[in-house]
Length: 357
Image (cartoon, rainbow, N blue to C red):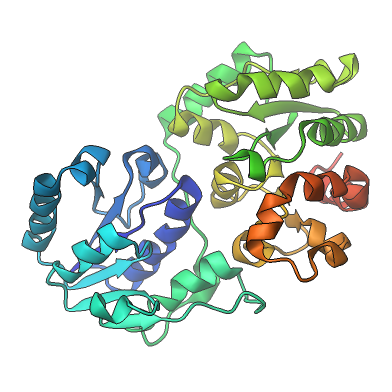
C-alpha cells in the first residue's frame, strides 16, 4: 500500500503533520509513506523512519502549466491508495483529484466534495481539544482509514544524528558553553511583524530571565533579522549581555535543530522554533500574537513543561465584538497591552519547574 501526505506550508505545519506518518506507520508497518512539502521545509523530515521519501513541488513547477501537468501525472504514476491533503488549496486539489487514489481525504469546505471523497469538519474555534487544534484536527484526517489508534503518542518527533550532536557540541565549546550551563533559547522574532512580540518587551523578558537564573542565553533569528536581534540585545543591560551568546547560530535548519537539542528550554514567540523544541521534548514558554487563536497552536500545553500566554487570557474585553481581520489590523496596540508584567509569575513558575537550581 502507498500513502501520500500533502502539507504545503511553513515549518511548524510540516512538522506537525508528521504525526500522520508516525501513526499510519504504526498501523500499516509495510506501507510506503511519501510526504509532499516545500523544499525549505524538508529538513524537519530528515531521519524520520516513518517517511519513505519526500516530494517537493517547486515554485518553477507551479509557474509552468506544462510542468505542473507533468508533475500531476508523475504523482498519478505512483499509484497511491491513500492521499491525505492537509493543505487543501487549488494546487493540491488538482493533484488530489487526478492522483487516482482510492481514499482522497481533506478538510470540509463548501466545494471540497468535488476533489475528495472524504471531507472532515475541523473542531470548532471555541472548542477545547485534548492536544490542541493543530494536533487533533490532523488526527481527524485518519478517521476514514483507522477506526482506532493510540492518541497518547501523537507528538511530532525530530531525529538528530550523532554527527549533528557533535557539531552542536563543538559550536558550544567554541563559544565557551559547557554541559554544566543551563541554556535558554529565545524565540526572538516571529515569522512576520504581526507575530513578533514588541522588541522592547522581549528585552524585558530576557532581563527577567537573566536576573532570575544563572543561565546562558541563545538568540534564534535569521541573518536577515539581525537588525531586530541587535536592537533587542542593545536594550539589555550590560550584565545580561554577558549571558547572551549573540553569535552562536546554526548555518541551516538542521544545525538549528541540533543546537536546540542541547538547550534546556525555549522562551518566546510562537512559531517554527517552538514547534521544533517541542518535537525534541524541550519545555516551552510561548507568547502568542493577539491575532493568532491560542486553541489552534497551543499544543500539548500542560501548565508545567509547556505553558502559553495570550492577551485574551488577561484582557478578554479587548477582543469583544472584534473580527479576526480587525484584531490583526490592531495587532500593534493589542501587543502593547500584553506587558510582560502580566505573565511574570507564570514565567517564574516555568523557570522554577524546568530549570532546577
